[in-house]
Image (cartoon, rainbow, N blue to C red; front, side, top):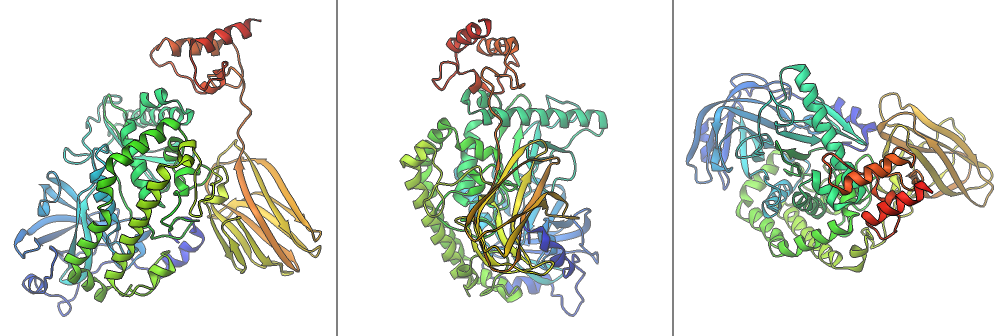
Length: 636
């Protein structure tokens, strides 16, 4: 599977190929013949000059010809360099590509200006072929995000062989017409930074709390300066995240461009983006500026097109990865933001301001599908994905046998989503910070299992995502199968509580483990609990000795009889707050008085790590009165 189920990845990869080989003369057609076949979209023809395009690590030389939708030459026989692009999608037969011109160019006058790098995205997992385009159209509406990639659908030929409909879109990179930030790799604080939060991070990587980040803009070629640059943006990111986590609007505004975060939250929530905490989540920081959350990227598995986790495909309910901060797939920026009263007020106001535009999204989908119906339909003569499951889409979507049916499914999903969010954003539940799921039930935002994928491995039984829990028959064999909660995160030094209720006969027992969900599947916690025929409760606290962002809770039902597990939970326990400890060093002393005084006087670089600990007057804010009370008590 793509993300949460790495157990299956090796098997999938083993049967896939990464090569795009030159076509033989017998199977190739000329550019004149390509133009004769053109239907309703622009057409791109790529000649790889006899080279294989078989890696994302390096480019190979090629030539490109582009016609607009009227058959008029836009770009003729131009030199480009091309490579594969993507992560798990590298293993699919329909490849995605990244290509670049030797000089800045603007094919089809698509973007706001010329640039070298462009993408051709296959969208194989999205049978509507419209989800990322629709998300970027939404991003254009939400203009507090400074940049959203421009895109349009095109038909693609490689070496004279038809490859189907692709999304031609701008690559995410630093440029005047894209992420317009300062580029000066000789500087540190005076340089601009483009950062991606990604579990696939490889170069220029840093970690803040539970997440990996990669600096995507250029860093210095001098290793010493590059290390300082990465340390600078890492430290700034950590300060920004912790300020947001504190709940203080004034603290958050010191580091974050809040309007961009409001728009970014709105976009990801409306799309129910399953990848918001996993990959392709971007922000930038310009020299002298704040963290700005943009651009949007990669929404093929959003907008109701994924069933990997509870409720993620449903048009109703909040995206659990936007509100539940205990999962390896959750987005801490969105989770911390939505818990703030002031942020929810801003979100509601922005929703009302943009609602009339947002409500046009379903018609955007219908119009695009209708106008270019012939080209979209031809895609499926090459890729036979209609009427069957391609990845993790719903059974209802998988059964659709026409492209128009998939477009209608997406448009209807958007109608329902917009209506549900509009009602929710004007409800008492939203005002009070009560987060509702697809069944209008309150989400347990601290339970990592709620945001995990539940499955059986090597066995079978019944999964209850609402409880959450499992029912299965115990086995006397050495291994009768496993019930799994995957996509769990552990952070070194953090204390957790594993708990569940279970009912089973005395002939059965349950082995439990928390283990790595990769490589050697190392166990971090294990044990066994017996049954007595009644409903019992199990609870175990432990402190993680390692940081691992991809773990699983494993339950094995041993012996004989039916075992029922309910209310499975893994919760990160908050340490008991120390009254007065505003600098969060675990003790309350004069250093906290000094820290609070400096912060109230707006001394540069002064900050409060845990301002709530200094709220001696208990009025939900901190001011000079709290400082007076703190001084009096500490001197008594």
